[in-house]
Structure formats: structure tokens, C-alpha cells
Length: 498
Image 1 (cartoon, rainbow, N blue to C red):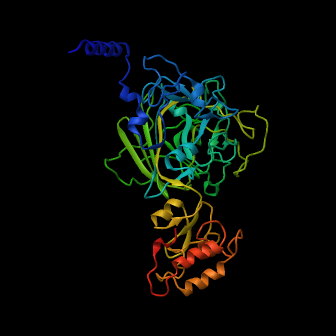
Image 2: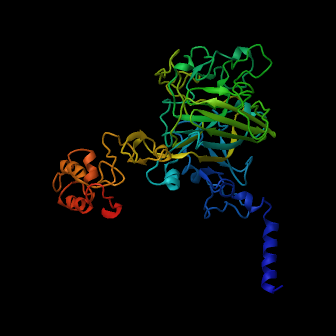
Image 3: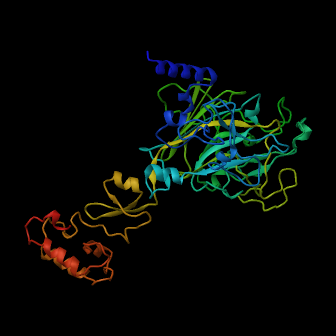
């Protein structure tokens, strides 16, 4: 072996002896595990000086976290709580994860959000700013989470959401998944650990908690989400029970665009899969890892969770059916609802018992409720633009999504176009009657479209006579037409139009 090779080997061995961290392959999770993703965040590049992708932050095992770098991706929500931050414990892939929730004096809940427009345009093209989930092209969202320690998970209020137009600064209380009414006073039921005697109860659930409207009348929100939601506890005082006297969560929560469900085995059917799913969507304490995957289709979503090696699975009907263009992580500031309505109560005083406010910076349950999230992934789906005209070779037209039009064999026009303002031309525009020859019948139609130079064609369909595509039908177009005109029953030459 040559000496330079020996020195190189010694250098590698020395480096391995210094770096007491997992192998590099595990530090490139997004690039090795989900190269198909539209958006993927393993939170491992939020450093003081991020290296070129896909390298991780700290090749020497030095903690150089940079929360500002994370805020460039996950914009912190205003006013309330702490936004998700970079954390160096309880990760699913080394070296970092996102910690959500805080244990400051008020334990206020916060959130971060991110728009996906740039990622979607990078993957699918500049004309697309959103994605659509269909049965043929489902959209999947995956993430992992842990309660970190002790029993924080059952007191948490955090979720990961994929929605539409909800990146950036959300309007507090407007289209919130978590608008609420106030509970009874809980202190008489027992010690509340110095927190508050009142607790929020989320209204978007069934059966409707006291003072909440029937959830079937709730407006649909452009979002699908999953997480841990202690505020779904409609009996947070737990009077007469040997338990904590504040809200708790025992199972995964899922939001379908209209309401939250506390998932349990048997609540929704299990459509089956590659392996049995006997789980009950039960949340595990301490630092147990929970893996969640939502497979969003046209009218339903397959919800899967693996915790402690046990798989839970069910299929839930969807109320919101896309498109999707943004993500939220945490807990969006909600408002207190007027009793029996879906309207914020309009109060502006936030000094009352966590309640009498248009938008209240809600506090988590006693003991914190902070959680760690990692490996957030959005993949699949199809690119989405606003529906537009879809032209078929027989010149018929429907209005459809871009991807649907192509799958049906049509040619999509501009997003937002309609069949009324779009010319669906024959495969050979000069053969208007599509009889495979260019004769006087076609010329008769062409004459009706002559507009003159710098004058728009007289009808929408006459744009098919604009053979040089300069927004008029003039002598230049006439010359091109006559060059194609060979007479009846003479096969037209498809190459006669340049």
C-alpha cells in the first residue's frame, strides 16, 4: 500500500474516533429517505453557517444551532407563544428536531408556518403554485413526534397541518382549527397545580360540547391536520375522578377540514394494508417515537400511526378536498366563540381567565406539554393550477384541472380560462370542418374571420384562423391558408402551416 493511501486511511480513522455520532448516511435523511418529496424538513441544517446541501450541520459534533435559520423556513406566528425551535434531543434523525411549545411563565402556545409555492414551482414548473390530491395521485404527509419526557404528551396541544393559502402570518381567529368556548371553573375539583381554573374546549368536535354549535354547521377550513389536542377534552375538570383536573389527550387527533376526531380503533374502518393494524392510536408517554402518515385522496384520507412497534390505521372521510399550498406546525391562536355560533365573541380584553378575548394567547395544560417533531415530509399529489378550459381534438371543450385535462387526453389552456373565451382548434387549424381536405367549405369559414391587420379576430373561434399567431386575421394568414388549399378530397398536408 502506498504511503499517501496509508495516511489517508489514518486520517479517516482519526476523524471517526473524534466524531461519536451516527454515520453520515443517517444525517442526510431528507435526501436519502425522501428524494421524491415536494417538501422535506429534518431540521438538520439550521446552523450558524449552513453547509452546502445535503450536508448536515455539525460534522464534528459541535452544537451550532441557529433558530433564525429555521425562522426563514417556518415563519413564527405573531403575538402568542414561542414558534417551533431547533432542538438537539429526541430527534428521529440526527442531529436536530423541532421543539414545539414552551414552558415560560404562561406556557403560551405558538406556531410556525411555511408556504410551499417555491417548492411546488421548482418541482413542477412556474405555472403551478399548489398541489391536488386525487385517488390516482394521493398526497402524503408524514412526520414523527415524541412527548419528550414524563407525561407531557397527554397535555400537549400541537399539530402539523397541510392547507391552502395558510403560509406566512395567519389571521388569528379567522378560519382557525381551534376556536373554543370556556369550561367550568375547575379549581373546586382539586389542585390545578397553580395554572388556571378555566380551560378552553375546542368546538369543532362531535358531540358538541356545551355552548358549542353543531359541528355539521361549521364552515369548512382549507386544512387537514393531525397531532395531539388536549383541548378536545370536553370535561377538563374531571370532577369526581382520580385524575388530573385539567385537559388531557390519550389518542391521536385528526382534522378533516371541518372537525377534529379523537381516533380510536373502530371509530372508522380499516381499509387493510400490507400488515395488520391492531393499534388504537394510543399515545405513548416519555420519549416514545410516534410516526404518522396521512395519505390524502379525493374524498378520504388514510391515517396511519406507528408507536411502540404497533400500527394503527383507519380511513376518514374528508370535508376539505384541496388544493394544498402551505403547512403549519404548532397551535394557531384561536378566538373564543360566541355561545352556539361559529363567530368570535368580539371581546378585546385578554386579561380575564384565559377567556374573554377576541384572540387569546392560550396556555397549555399544567406541566408544559412541549413536544419534539422531526422528518416532516410532503410528497406525491399532482401539480395544481386554477381550473381552465380543456380542449379535445374534436374541438369540444370542458373546464378541468390541468392534470385531469391531460389524463383525459385533452390540451389544457391557461389557468382560469373558460370554454367561452378559449378557441379549441382542430388538429389542423385550416381544416375547420375536419374532413381531411382544405376546400371552399373551409375557405368560407376563413372569410368570416378576416379582421385586418392589428384587429382582433371577430369571434373566439376565429382565433384558430390566426395562423401566424399575431392576434389578427389578415393578408398574411390568408396567404398561409391559400398555400394549404388543395381542393376537395385531396388529402391535406399537415406541414403546410409553418
